[in-house]
Image 1 (cartoon, rainbow, N blue to C red):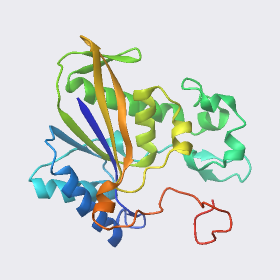
Image 2 (cartoon, rainbow, N blue to C red):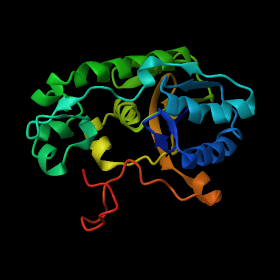
Image 3 (cartoon, one colour):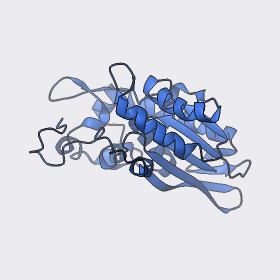
Image 4 (cartoon, rainbow, N blue to C red):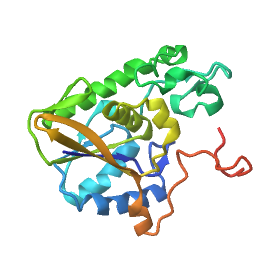
Length: 242
């Protein structure tokens, strides 16, 4: 089975939809995804993801199932220094990298700031939601692997957000989401692909074959958005710093 996880196109957060650039990205993405044979589409309830998905769905005459747990990962934490709420994946590296537990797949959500922000509970909600969907498609979670109930070559597509995507990948690949949040960047409308490997009959794991693919943008002459990134050099004043 193949899983395709798509981050929404360039967002207009103020109206929870897409910018004009985002709509162009979504149309280029639709050309790519509509060429696939997709068993089922799933989408976040948030507008920017649904608008991205609808560009493809309308082209295909298809619908998507809305999954509440696919919304952007919502577990704000209180910054110890500023005393303001922030999202877990925007911590300064010089702060979070001091704590070894953040690199551990089992301990990353045990830091007091994470516990106060109910990060662990939200991560469990995402993992359980993902496993429920995978089981309906023939793969039941057992420990760190999946028991194959119905082996298949189906493709299923998720339209969602960067934060929740990293939690999904962490669950499937056994990696701390904190490492993924800070070490990887999925540009708007990017496509991440995972494929099952069933090397022994009845036992499967997921392997990521590509992350954050934006070849559809390059093919359409569309410059990738800077969203989700921070400044490449501190002197780049036009780029986001914090």
